[in-house]
Length: 229
Image 1: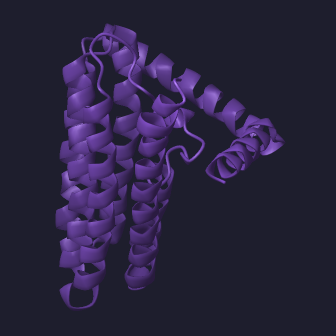
Image 2 (image 1 turned 120 degrees about the vertical axis):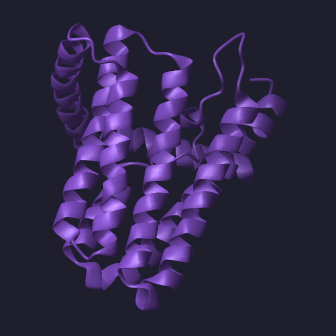
């Protein structure tokens, strides 16, 4: 029964990868990545390393908490967008100068703190109406982050390539990881009055991601090992 379900999921994922929508999205992403990589090389040539970009973006992103607390949503949105752009740019700089383990750690660590900080900022903006929904969103965010980090810890292999979740038929790519979270933050800055439904929806999506990661980890660490793969 489980093998039939896995087979069907694999088939659906393969159909999606072969679809025109997926191919066009990949093409646009590659063009954008090529442009960003060029900017990264220029920054690297001028003595700016990836960690500097990460820290700069983090500092700007943390300023969003203050603006949100004062209901200055446009200013908060600008800080959020600058932070997300720096998150893309630091990767390009790292690829130009060479990726380091500390750089990977710093980037992930600052990202998790930033996301939690923005949620905290929305709670401060209107504690009476936003506090409970913000707590639920933090619950979902913590669940997905913990599942991902726990898998990374267990699957770490210093002598070879760690097992990738993307190889699992249950994995949904970057679900609730980048684009969806950014889109939710942008919507919340534009429509702060809709914090309750958007926060609950994103919190549920984060919980779904946690479930997907657990399912994918079980597939990689249990099912594939039983099958000798």
